[in-house]
Length: 287
Length: 221
Image (cartoon, rainbow over the protein chains, first blue to last red):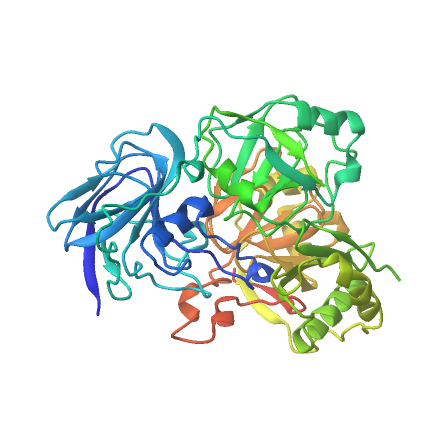
């Protein structure tokens, strides 16, 4: 039965429904999409014993505010935006209460899951909103979020709480060296340039979004500035003519003509996603 | 005949089936796509055909190391014949030559606007691939006299329906998006429209054009 759980009062800087994304449509120009930080999104569902593919809300930074329309178990993970409820654990919210994220402290993307999973319209096999591609739209004030399945979560009797271990709760202000493997145009770069990339410090630019994360640092120089456009995977480190890397993220173009030096390990794409503009990241070669 | 592969991350292979962009490469691409649709290799999650390359992505639970399957696939692909491109009549795309960059492009080419329009409108184009944004068709073969580099600085917003020239190709923006191609015309036709998908039709119907399709521009003015 359809149950209304939240009303969006303020969407904040950006809020969309996301799941694990869509497969099979890249050849039509539709990127995979899905939660930018899959690690946190999966934990939000897992805390409530939801299916991993249940839609969650992804909030960008701070500012969102929601009202609870019906008592429900919820879980908030991801970026720390001074939520008014404990995070990384199931929380029982009561009708009439507010859930808010007033101030960003660390990280970029916040995830909200609801016991039973959120309802979301599906396009091309996924509820992930891809706003630029007109597959759904960001949440706006007045939108109502509904539970898709039935409530099933209960804390086992005698258990006061359940919480994600500290090891899984990342300090987004100090990312580890992100693991990178060889990209299709690895050979376009000299040893010196590759060394520069792996030894260098790269600052996340404010021109970063669900499409791609731009990095600034000492510029690299590929042997050729353009290649015949070819398929691009999420996590690809593209080096355009200005030598400043762009890492393709989940809503990024499906094909591209810039040489690709490397590919960020899939698990570390989630890490990178939570690196705020201005933060410095470093990379580590893995083969 | 070119047919090589490289790994692209741990779960994908990138095959190169041609050295040069063109009709020959397109026929080979369509042959490979038909083969993959008829006879998908075990664990294939999706494939992405492009001008001279095709990406195959695998499910690590079914195929943990695609590199081990690569040589077998290469031999199989090598035996695949070029596909005959559909002889179906070209899809007509109505358009008006009223693009923001039309005059500047004509000036750079030392042609009149009229000449640019005639050269652009004359051929029957082929869809070489879809990419960049949903359903965006990369159309060849553009008259070499109209080949134009992308803008030095991409526009933050290009309107859906803008017909543009980028390098050796012409294409049609399918959604409002940033873009660096030279805009010469606009079409009222929706090349990509989510409303044509479910429940109104099959999901593929969202995409008006498919690789291999032929396209003819028809002037409205």
